[in-house]
Image (cartoon, rainbow, N blue to C red; front, side, top):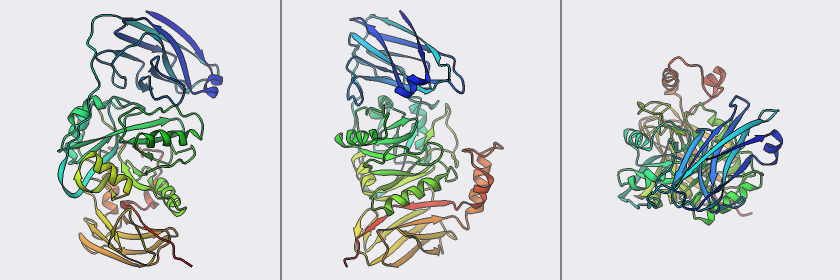
Amino acid sequence: MVEITVHVTPADQAADPYFYVPVDIPADTTRIDVTMTYPKADNCIIDLGMLDPHAGDYPTTAGFRGWSGGARDRFFVATDDATPGYIHGEIPAGVWKVMLGLYKVPPDGADVRLTVVFDSASRELLPPPARTFPVRQGAGWYRGDLHCHTFHSDAAGSPELLHAAAKQAGLDFLAIADHNTITQRRYFHPHSSAELIFVRAMEITTAVGHANVYGVDEWIDFRMTKPEHAHTLSRLVHDHGGLLSINHDKPTIQWDYDLPRIDCMEVWQSHWMAWNWVSLARYQDRLASGLKISAIGGSDFHQPARLMPEGPLALARPTTVLWLDELSEDAILAAMKAGRGYVTESPTGPHLALTVNGQPMGSTTQAEVTATAETKRAKGDTLVWIDATGILSTETIGSDDWTGGFTGRPKAFLRTEIIAAASREGLISEFSAALEGRSLPWQLRSVEMASQPIRRAISNPVYVKALLC
């Protein structure tokens, strides 16, 4: 056993928000246990993680052994098992590093005490789970949630409970993006099936911005400390053949790094009233600037320790709906990148399929357009047509199976939204009932509840070529 006390200060935090405490691990060790104590308070929050001797400076591609952020004050790593969020496997001799995330440090600093226990009892050396490749044949619209969490990061619920919640919601696919770790795959790799495809994901989580990585099996270094490190992140993700998406670019955790090359943007996270008009406006501005970015949505649901009933604050609120030739992880990732889909309020929310000059969402077409928008389950609500200049026209949706139309010369792109009109009062009542008497969340005010338009569905754009002079 080794006991180490370090004093961390605001100066340490300013120099590098990640503080490393070296620990020499002897040969033949098969398990390491680490416990952290410190004076936790509103102004003193220290995160926790571990690197083995293979790790280098940022960005490293090896040596990550786990991260639990502020969710845990202890963990173990062994050859055959590990605490959720930590990676089991070979334990090489040498200098390991306990990684402290200096999220909040008081003016006078704080003492952090680490107790490290290691032993060499006989244990198996187990490999990581292998990825599986399930496929469900058949083209069509498939529904999923692209952002949720288990107890492998900061949720209370197990992967098994989240799996049950996804089945309860009737989803076809699910991306579990635990914070700064990939260890949720211990469960989700072997349990991915044609009934419910699990998409590989990881949420890059820092104090000044979050982003989701999709379709990468390897851990991606999250230790970004400079605005330009966003470009490093993008390179790492794309070098591994993955997709990068900016998350919830709105209060209270907006994206404050440089904007790198991204494939997607989470334009809708959790209930619409969770300030999603801010992230949608930023998406609109980025499209208007000439960028081509796919719109996706995710609940950011943190699975509780019990299965919750369906409702407006549950998993798959919102739901991302994609047109796929087959249901497989590769097909899901390709449709996400191409923008072949839309975001809707729930698994049973309004359908919204935009076609421009016969081309699907995510395509590029000529400047003179004839467009249709097929809608379902939105009678009495408003269909809005939007290009780079803003709203072009609106239509009242006449029935629960209805098609709107637009003809003209939109600038840069054409996209559509369904805004609650006839359904607004019911949606507000449903949201208020789900709060069960609690005050409004997310620092939301009654004025926003009264004045903000409620989107029910958001299409991806079709891009429009500029007219030649």
